[in-house]
Amino acid sequence: MFSTKSRYALRILIDLAQQKSDDFIPLKDIAERQDISKKYLEIIAKDLVKGGLIKGASGKHGGYMLTRAPEDYSVGEIIDHMEGTFAPVACLEENAGECPRSGVCKTISMWTEFYELERNFFYGKKLSDLL
Image (cartoon, rainbow, N blue to C red; front, side, top):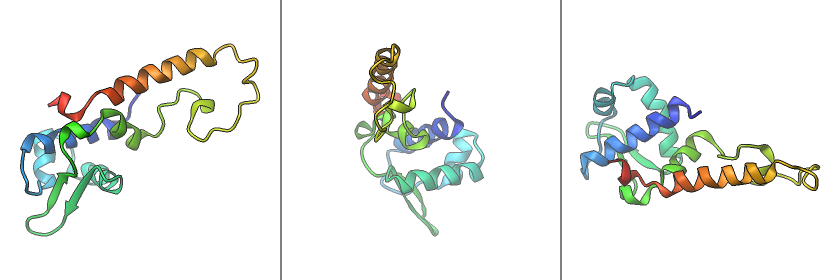
């Protein structure tokens, strides 16, 4: 199950994309349109800035904007940034060491197939597909 942080991050990015503006969009405006607490959105926006998914500016004309075109964002990268790995089991995580059961594991092919399906689905969807 995906957290509210991921779902709200998507809503922030969709909202910014819908504004079709070269100006920074105030977070309070996004919070009002999305009916989400501005305080909670501040936490999420800070994380999105840290990940390079949006950029922010403070001051009178401050706010947030996308760092690239909506078609250049995959939903997978957004969820991955907010949640961490899509890997359903530890042995499929990036930089996972060799599993001691890899030679006898009867379920790894199932987990690998699921992981690839999930990853391909979300990485195949673009932010622009959600607009």
